Length: 208
Image 1: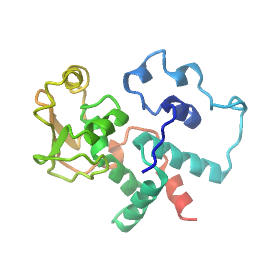
Image 2: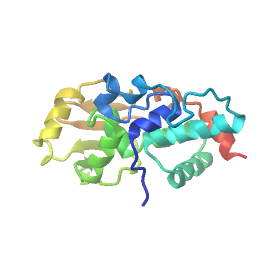
Image 3: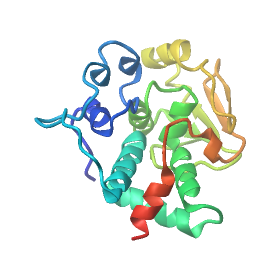
Image 4: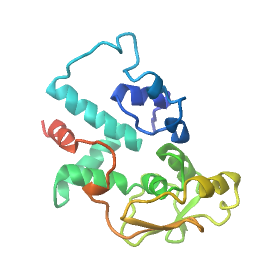
């Protein structure tokens, strides 16, 4: 399976906003976007007016990069969203939010979605008592997500518990920060998405 292996900060600069891909670094003066808030490359500082298609493409790329999803899988999510009841764009965001790696991040059990993806892949999490090492696993209402008991004493999870686990989580999740346990109590809605996303542009792009 292919994956992006380039510098994460370059993606933020390309999309013209912080995507918070590097955890703590994004909040410091070391953040590349804070120092160079323009697209990378020789002509990055030139002002370019985007066409309608350009705006749609950039919005799709931005959302893919926020959630760490590549094109084939992203299109699959869109096809699923179209078949669901409701608005396709909102359904798409809801599906992306329900990915296990995103849920781990939203619960505060990782500093970024990228770290969450690695931790899930290394089998540090259980869902309903069973180890799940698939970052794209879609959680459902009632699912209980917890750090494996054997992992809780590891240095990284001790740090996570101290630095991130006590941060507020979205209302569709509840958690026991002390024991690193979370539960899905509702499906995520559009109001739960805290990034500036114009999902209608993605729908328009794929509908052509």
